[in-house]
Length: 148
Image 1 (cartoon, rainbow, N blue to C red):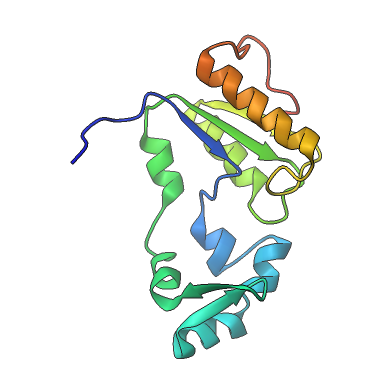
Image 2: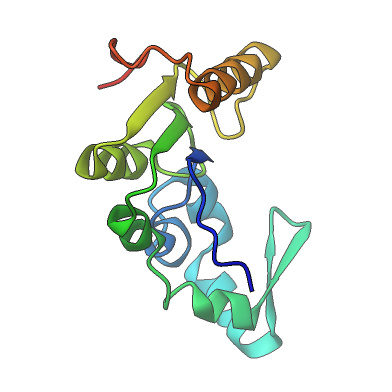
C-alpha cells in the first residue's frame, strides 16, 4: 500500500456533486441522460445507457448516492487548481467555483468552453495553465482569467 499523498492536485471540469450531476441533474446533458425513466430502466434491467453508447451499471449508479466528492475535496489541504469551462453543459461550473472558493484554492475559468475544453485553443489553455501551476510559474498574484 502506498502511504504517500500527492503534493498538488489539478482537477479539470470536476464532478464534485454526484447528486446534482447524475441523480437530480441540473444541466442539459444530465437531464437528457439521467431521466426518471432511465433510472427505473437501470434499476430493473441492470444498466443505463449514456449518450446512447456508454453503459453504466446498476452498482455504479447506486454508488452515486453514497459518495460526496465535494466534501472530500473540501476537507483536503493538498494545494489544488481547478480548471473549468464556464459554458459546461455536462458538469456544473457553479459547483466547482463554490468548492474552490470554500477551500481557498486556485480556480481558472476557460472562457466560453463547454465540457472537455471544446476547441484546440481552449485545450491548449488548460494544458498551459496546468503546466505553469505545477512548475510554479503560474502567476498567483493575479486573478485567474474569467474568474467570478
